[in-house]
Every structure is written in C-alpha cells, then in structure tokens.
Amino acid sequence: MTNGTCVNPRNSRPLPVTKPTPSDRRITVLQLCEHFGGRDASLHGVARSFQWWMPAFDTVRYRVLLCSRKGRDKAALVMEQAGLSPLYLGFGAMDPRNLFSLLKILRRESVDIIHAHGYGACTWGRVAGLLTGTPVIVHERCNTHTVPWFQRPVEWLLGRFTRHALAVSESTRQFCIHGRYLRPEAVQVLYNGMLLQDMPRMTPDQIQAFRREQGAGPDALVIGVVGRLESHKGHRDAFQALQVVLERYPRAVLWVVGDGTYGDVLRRLVQELKLDEGVKFLGFRADARQIIQCFDIQLFPSHMEGTPNTLYEALAAGNAIVASTADGQGEILKDNDTALLFVPGDVPVMADQLIRLAGDPALAVRLRAAARRRADDFDGRRTISTMQALYDRIMAARDASTHPASR
Image 1 (spheres, rainbow, N blue to C red):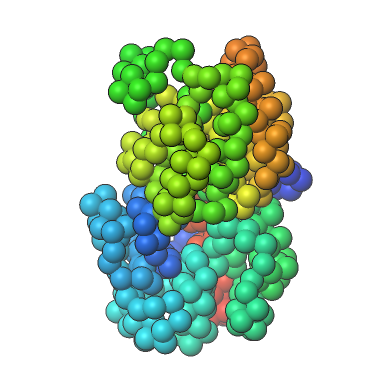
Image 2: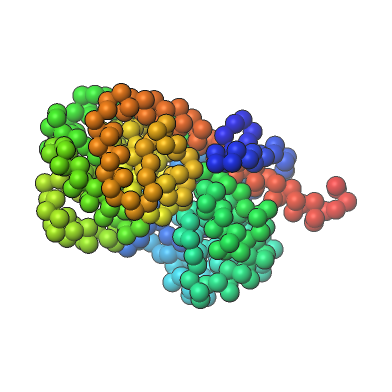
C-alpha cells in the first residue's frame, strides 16, 4: 500500500482511492453479516474485524450500524461485552423472514448502503437492495474455491446486479469473478490489515512468565497456531509435522489457540498420534495478541483462507513465520524474506521449514525484522479510509443519478 492507494502486492496494480465527496448529511451504512461465530467458535475473523472497524469509522461523516443474520448467541454476547450494539435478523440462513426483518431495519434506520459479509447476508442484502434501491457492497472474506451447485443459480442472478464488491485477497477476487459470477470491474482487493497502534507489547519478563505458566521451560521450542478449529485450517498437518520436528527437537511443543467445531476431532487425533505431551490446547483467548509474542515460531498451516487476521497480527508482532501459500498468505508473504513458505498440505516441507528456522537464529532475526516492516503495508487506517472512500463514491453516483441537473 502507498498513500492514497491500496496495492495488490502480487501484481502491484494500484487501486485508486478517491477523495471523499462532500455531503450535507451523514451516510448510514449497515454492516450486515451472517453471524459473529460458529456453534463452538467464540469469534470469526469478520467479528474480530468489526471490533476495531466500528470505533475507527469517522462518526462525523458516517453512521455505521452492525447487524447479524443469526440471533444472539455466545459470539454475539462477546461482541456486546466489547461495547458493540448489534441488531439481529434472527432467522435461519434461507428463511424468507430475514428479508422482511431486514426491510424493516432499512426503513427504520434510513440505511443508505448495505455492506454485506457472508453468503446468506449477501443474498438477503442484495435482494433487499434491489427492492429498495439501496446500494449493496458484497465483501468476500474467503476463497472457498467453489460454490455448491444449488447456490449457483442465485449467485449467477444476483451477480448481474452486483456493482460493488471487496475481496480480502487477489485469489479471493478471482473466486468472486469465477465462482460468484461478479464482473471483474466490480471487485476490488482490500486486505483486512489491522490498527498497528492496537498491538500490545509484552516485556521479556512477561513472555517468560507466561511460557513458564504453560509449562514451557527456557529450552522449549514453542510453535504456535492461532485460529478456529476447522478442518480446512490445517491443524492435522501441523500435528504430523510436529512428529518430525520432535525427532530433532524433543522439547518442541505446539500451542493451539482457538476453538471450533473440529476441536474434539483434533483432541482425539493428538491421542492417536501420541502427542499428548507435545500439543497444548489453549482454547479461545481474548489475549491472543499477547500470547503470540510468546511463540518462537508462528505456524499458518491452512489449506483454504482469505487472508487471516492472525497473519497481520503476527507481522505486527514481528514473529518468525512458517506458512502455507494458501490464498492471501501466499500473496502478502515472500519466501525466505518475510516467512518460510510451503504448498498447502505438504507436511514434509512444513516440517523441514520448521526445523530449518528452529536451527538458524540469524534467519529468525532476519524474518522477524522483515515481518515488522511488512506490517506497515497493512495499516488498518488505510483499510478504513478505503471503505469510507467507497461509501462516498457510491453516494456521489447515486446523488448524481437522482439529481442529474446538479452534475
């Protein structure tokens, strides 16, 4: 990224950010998402984004509301405890009552723009947008590679009417074009980023104290994985790689931070692989940004991603990173520069990269320094300003079409 533009690091094509268009009133934006977390996962990545997005918007120019398609659940309560006040549609993903509930909110709150995240939210949001003339932004956060056959007709139909879309990586942008039938010119890459000033700093004493608390001695090699416990996140591969690493580094331990629907499966797998002493499940942690600073190596073994928030946090923390090239990870990381990379699912190379990094302190120092520099390219203030500029362009275009004489 550079001042005034958001740059796709893979092909370096700048995406213009126009200056805000003056308006006599605040723009009301409804951030509409599927849900804040799964059945067992406390928070999804989109929910974590909302936690720093919502207070960061310019409240003079924008009135930003938050709404979940799903009703109040464990994750929603976490959002409320964080000081947010979400609205809820409260029905199943394909329940048509979502549409009527959403239409009521649009009227009551005088919503100018719907900014939708997730399949159901994007579906109902776009239908409501067509019925009311409200502009809709589709925000795709993951490259799932394919769309179920029964969803394709709806995606094809709604794709024809989708004029604004954001994707969290270039690979996700390609998925939007080829999997969700969106026009190429409608889809802009916007990497999530993070507010760098929000990254807490742990002192060496605090780091050592936490490692001792978790049973990691001074000679332990702490490898950490942070994220939801889901099948596509690659934890199974990480466990298999750990078996190889332990042959070289018997004091190695893998900390697993997060919860999710795959947790019980992973715990059984640890027992089957006889890794009870090598794997420690820390569960969901609100202090994950502090915990990652206690890792010697942060591992990203995912098979499928958009661009994970935890990767931006690892860069900001200056961590030594080993990562798969899944989607956005392979776009913003450079092998042997900001990280050591491997092809998703390649367990032998993952293990080799972990062993190489563990045995080369100079390499670890170099990767950490490069990670800190790379983090500056993803300052969340630019993410916010890019979204605000898009809101302004949408409203300016709508005002120009509504009042052609003023052009």
